[in-house]
Image (cartoon, rainbow, N blue to C red; front, side, top):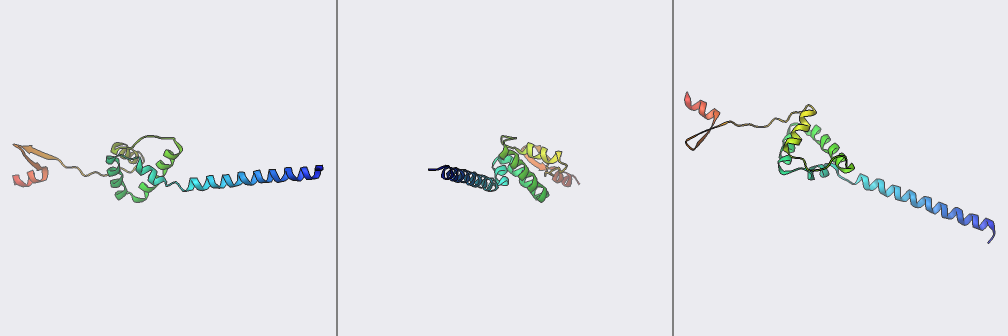
Length: 125
């Protein structure tokens, strides 16, 4: 083999290596895009966290979607870890300026009988 043939072989090897690296980079970027950030977030919610998030989603649908995807991204990157309960979800939305309205009920118990405050007030008239 003369030097020209060796040079050509070396060029071909280098070209193959570069093509291989390019293909590896393309597959890595497509793998990253396939991850559903919303599902990742939703799978990291406790049962009470899911109820609170669904309540938030009914009140702020677009905001809740964006928050879920952003938290999912942070979970994917490893910046945050763990499960989210209802208090955490409420706190996140509250801190961002979107307080979740929760249905509250005050009850009155007397001699084993449970009445709501509205029933108690109606009954006194």
